[in-house]
Amino acid sequence: MGHLGYGIDPMVLEGIAPEIKRLVDEGTQLGIVVGGGNIFRGLAASAAGMDRSIADYMGMLATVMNALALQDSLEKAGITTRVLSAIEMHEVAEPFIKRRAVRHLEKGRVVIFAAGTGNPFFTTDTAAALRAAEIGADVLLKATKVDGVYDSDPFKNPNAVRYDSLTYKQVLEQELKVMDSTAFSLCKETGIPIIVFNLATPGNIERVVRGESIGTMVGGNHAAVDR
Image 1 (cartoon, helix red, strand yellow):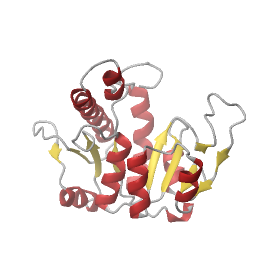
Image 2: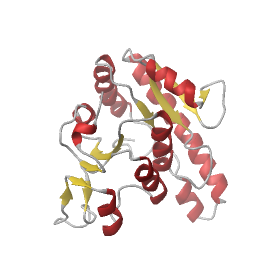
Image 3: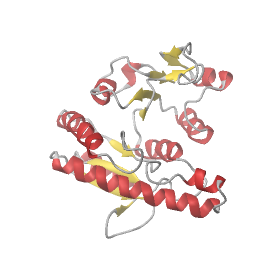
């Protein structure tokens, strides 16, 4: 949503597309999982009294809207994409099938995973960890609004300390907020390293994929980012 406060900011999409274009042209295989919080937050609606399952399904539908917007932006930049949805809606997206997703990646297409896991009570983080495990990803990149993992909330504590790298064990022992526990456990079990980095800084997507030391690496080292 950029600076709009709600909805989809075309400027954000226009900033992301050229970076992804350059990476794809270099041969990087990218799968992208999108959330829907800029349109609808299921957890917030549930807290306000809506049935949790209904709220979560509404949130999943919001991710499909974001996926289609991202697809449009990427294809305008000359990137072949496919949207694969965990909730079937044949008119706008392909159903998620693991082998189909892998085949698209092998053909150099960017795959956008929409509708979360297709089940309520699971977050976008969990959907990302699940899809990463299913397609055999080298690394899970968590693009967020902070530049890594801190020992406390950097927006509330000006003295918060950022970590360059962490082990899975350190994250658990120090109860650090990397991603939700289900998603983190899946990454730990499958050995997929996680890099948390700031999406808002221009060029960061390229830097992190190329192995530059930005953000916080959990469970591996920056050399593990493999094209």
